Length: 135
Image: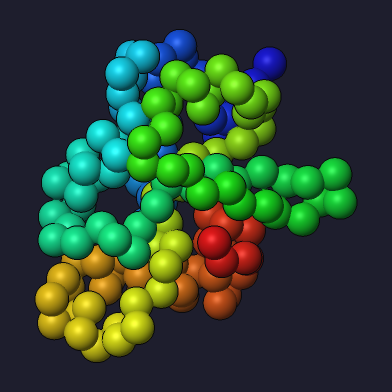
């Protein structure tokens, strides 16, 4: 039986875990790509720019350390799920590419800056969805 935080509980529905504790669900078919999910999240979270963000798969290695795998924009979700055994993995929406100038990010996209702040705060406190490690 899959854990409740597993990547895929219902066929063709992907759960994406956000840094603020929310979970967004996405239905997909053979044509749905990672980029499609990213664009929908950009809209739902009122983000102007998503170049610092990525969908990331989180899993525990045999050594029990957390590992992260960045998903590429053009990857079809169905292909990602079919190619790999993702039991126990979670799909996270993360700031994966730190901005050169966080203050400029604050000016240009306050919602993205807030998301970055939540992620960094949670990681530094060891409470984040990433198990205390940044992507």
